[in-house]
Image (cartoon, rainbow, N blue to C red; front, side, top):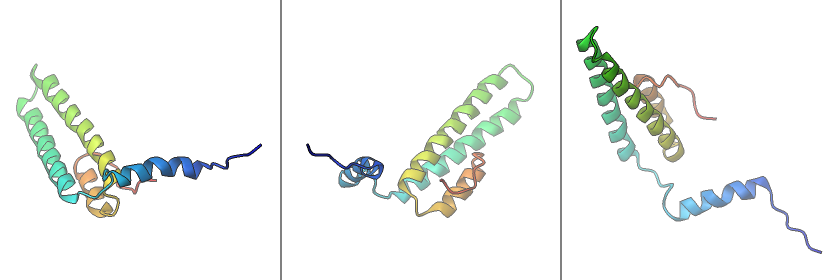
Length: 107
């Protein structure tokens, strides 16, 4: 009877290796920089609209817009942590400026 020695590290390394071989883990700092800047502009537009609308019935629409922009910020944050792990300095500052509030390195 033969046994197969598979460790947790082997299980975790297989998808990572497959993603690297397929080119899914290549670094694309310009792509993420453009996305971060666009998201910051979208957030600024949402907050500006929220302030300009003041106390009106359109305020929930502006709040929904800002909430969607914050969700997009979280998606961008996660993708950049997975793909651009060497550029952590500008990612941390973009997270704080974008309102994500996380200024620490990922675990």
